Length: 483
Image 1 (cartoon, rainbow, N blue to C red):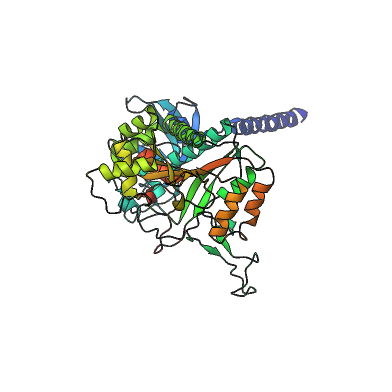
Image 2: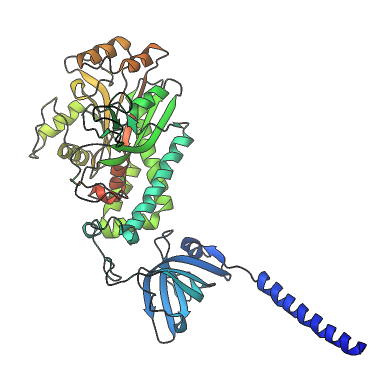
């Protein structure tokens, strides 16, 4: 009797132990390492069980095997997935979202360093390739892609652009940090029209409790056209400041050169009385950011230089190898007047330089960036420093002109002399509006200057892209929906 009970207990105990071992084995099974495609391609975790999530860029079913290319936006190059035909699924189509687990192995093919031998393929998001506007074997032009602002990030060319844009942003921030600049977050809503052109978007509350003629801030408020005046405030306490953020212009943005919303990099340097101090920052920042992009996004930049703007690589190389020359506005006008080019706009001394003039000057100077300094005083805003030179009467202002774009940067020394600044504000009827600006000159004022760079124009310059709407994630059109 006791032997039978003992035998029963022994069997039960053995069964429990077995279940426990199976349970331990289940919980001890190693979870697949989640990798980005760029990490997998680099050979990270080679030989390990890994998981990759992304979107299918190509599908090649064969009798015994299935080949997929999967991309997750981390790299221009896709990861090849190799699976048995048993893992094929009708939902595995171009554009579908998938999760793949398997063993990362060296690839026997020269064109790819690694491949993922799939054990499981799970379709997370379906995509009907018939309705999808981008086709698997077609190379779509920028004009076609522009019709689908909500989908164009799925294309190779635009995903490359967005990675380049991200790295360019990082490169600009790195330059300023390494050179002692303090970043300032300037307001998006302001009462200042820094540019003085009146191209402003007014901000009004939509709540019915506010009357139409009632200003939310007691004064009219607008979306900022520049953070410069706020940086000037900060330059009374910090010797080097910068901002990098969105700016807005209520001008015709239907052209290939204009945007209603875009990004500006702006800097202000205190204790300087030299335009050369500003041009040095402009040039060094341009070089540093561009070298950063080329170092971190070589494949993506090559995509543009080979397939979108062939030959532009030579232009970029020349810009980085040679120092940027400097000419005065008067010299620029003389160059234009001596040329055989037929310009649409006049080239008399005192006229504002138009894009056609700027592009000609760049070509004349060897198709590299060129600084133009000392513009007519009347062409520049109230804050530009008066050179007090006669009879020409110019301002200590500077523009950086670059190939394919024209003006990239605009800046000036600021008028720090209180009497001259007050006289200028009185002349244009702005003394009351900018009384606070005069205070900056009353209390510990120092000579200072600064500039602004159009970020989208910078991207056009280094990539050779003709239409500014192809270098911003979400361009605003008057006839399109606002995402």
